[in-house]
Length: 301
Image 1: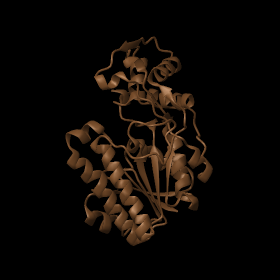
Image 2: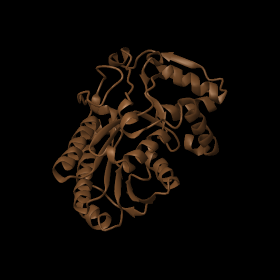
Image 3: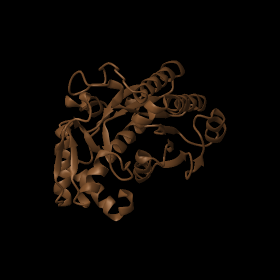
C-alpha cells in the first residue's frame, strides 16, 4: 500500500513517516516545502493536479494549524488552512476512490470534559477557532463517508510528545529546564492533568486505521487512557534527567486557570474494534525523547 501523508514535515508527520515505512508501507510526503510534492493544500488546483494524479491508495491528513493562540489571532487563516484544505483533499480522495482517508482530529472538539474518561459519543463543545475548525472538518469527513462512500476514519488525539515536538510545548520545556538545572514553573501548582503520551502510540493507531476494514466510518479516541498531572510529569522528567531543577509553584496566570483542568480519553473503543494497544508507556517515552534531545541539543534552543 502507498500512503499520501500531508504535513509530513511536522511533529507528528516526521515521526509517522518512518514508523509506516518500518511496517513496509510506501510513503508519498507532501508539505509546503522539503517533501516529495511541495504545495499548498488550500489550492484546489495543486490538490487535484499535483497530488490527485499521483499513485497512492490512502491518505493520512495531518497538515493544519495547531496553535490555539494563532487561531485566536487569525481565525480566518485557521479556517482556510484547517477546513478548506481538508475539503479539497476529501474531494480529490472521493474522485480518486482511495481505499482509506484518515483524518487527524483532536480532543479539543470535546471542550472541557463533562465526564471522565471522555468517550467518543460525548458531545462537541468547542471553544477556540482551532477547536471549531476541527469540528467543521470532522463534519466534512463524515459527510463524504455518508454521501460519497469514502472510507474515512477520524482519530481524536490527546497530548502527544516526542522527537521534533514544538519547543514551546510542555515536555520540551521541562526537558530543557532540567538539562540546564533551571527552575520548572508550575502554574496553579501544576494541578492540571492530561493524557501525555509518546507519538509512537499515535503512529500505531494510524497503522490500524489504515489497515483494518473495521475502522471505516468510525471515530476513535487515541491515547493511553492514563491521567498525569503537570506536576507529576515535571517530577518524572526531573528524575529521568537526574536534574537539580527546583519545581517552582506559581499561582494561576488567569482566574480561569484557578480550577484545575482534567482530561483523559476512554480508549475502550479503539481497543475493542481495532485491537489497539499502546506501544510505549509514559516513562519509557520520556526516556526515549530525552535521548533524542541529548543527541540534538540545538533542538532545545
